[in-house]
Image 1 (cartoon, one colour):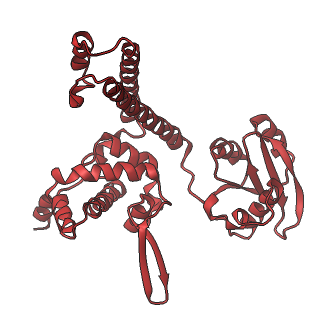
Image 2 (tube, helix red, strand yellow; image 1 turned 135 degrees about the horizontal axis):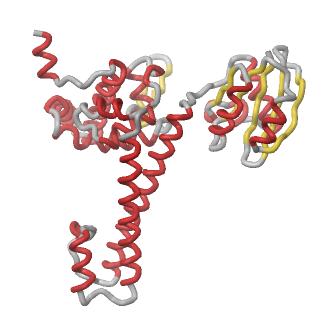
Image 3 (cartoon, one colour; image 1 turned 180 degrees about the vertical axis):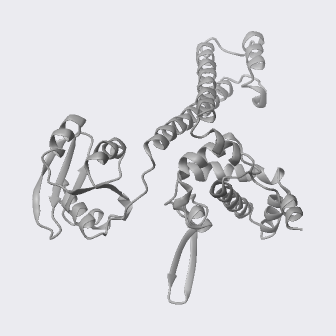
Length: 342
């Protein structure tokens, strides 16, 4: 078996080919194009295993090389301490160290979702960008009116009818900001249509439709939460326990243990930030829709911290979503579970 380490960049890829004994068979640099990769892969000995560090360019390179190797592995960049903390660091050395980690089975491999999941996840994350831009534009409209002293009702500002009446009847709106307000309103409407189209396309996707329907039976889970869970969590079988899923969602803190002392730190930064944000926002509203979640929230709020109570609700929602996904069934409320048990 030959072990190949790749140090991937936007324009070039540094590579190092080693055998099981660690002898270097070939190393060098090629261009980051599909044509160059095809010509290069045909010159390499077989059988071969390839490893690379996770970057923004990793996805298409992983898909392109997968048919040409026994295995293609992707390493977690934060876990490659041998590279990150090295005194001497360059592309050639990085590729060699990745090959060594692969050869010695020390590579901190991270999960690579299937291509069809990554394609749909890209659409969902683009939708997040559209929503952020829409919120920024709404805030800017409100800022323009406040800067010029225009009296308005902020809670109704972005409703179509109210905004139109404000533009036609208010004499306080200066001519200098009217074009900016119209342009901002057009941007908001365009973002709203794009948001609806992206979410609708994912909800009706044959790969996701049935899974989304089951996930939405969980209290507090709407279409956006269900889509984020399905696409960010991917294959749910890779989580062996609820604790692993909670950790991946960033709903627990780091642990620092030494001898008999155990310290719990703030929420870990090593998490999937997209699913974390969505679950926390959903957990703020979920107690209104479920008596069981409301009880969990009330028990946690006794300690005097609303944020901890929200996290407790979010962790319970993770347990429910995990159960629904694993068993491929709809959520059963506590009342019905008690009746069935009786």
